[in-house]
Each structure stands twice: as structure tokens, then as C-alpha cells.
Length: 78
Image 1 (cartoon, rainbow, N blue to C red):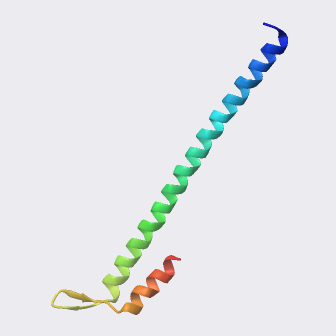
Image 2: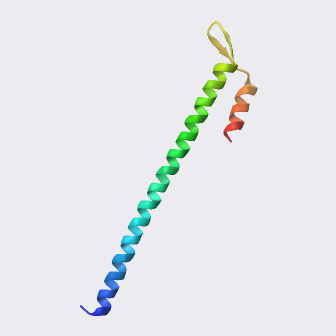
């Protein structure tokens, strides 16, 4: 094997290693992003439940919710 071939193989191996590390980093970042989005949605759900618990009228165990309250919460989500 010539020196040029060895250099070419070494360069290809280096590039492959860098690409594998980059792929791993991107996948890790993507998973972190999904976890953050999930946590945000869970927080919104908790907030909505708490809001309804504190701001609804109950009549014979039926919750009465004003549509404007629902819209207010949905606007907060954005």
C-alpha cells in the first residue's frame, strides 16, 4: 500500500468517525428537544387542570366551564 493510499484511508476513517460523533450529537440533541417539549406540554396540562379546579363552578358534581376560560388557557399555550 502506498503512502497516498494510507493517507486516503486515514482521512476516510477520520471523516467516518467525525460523522458518527456528529450523528450521535444530533440524535442526543433531538431527544433532549423532544423531552423539553413534552415537559412543556405536561406543565400546560397541569396548569389547565389547576385552573379549572380553581375557576369552575360545580353543580351536582358537574363542572361548569366558561368557553372564554378555555380560550384564555389555549392562548397561553401559544
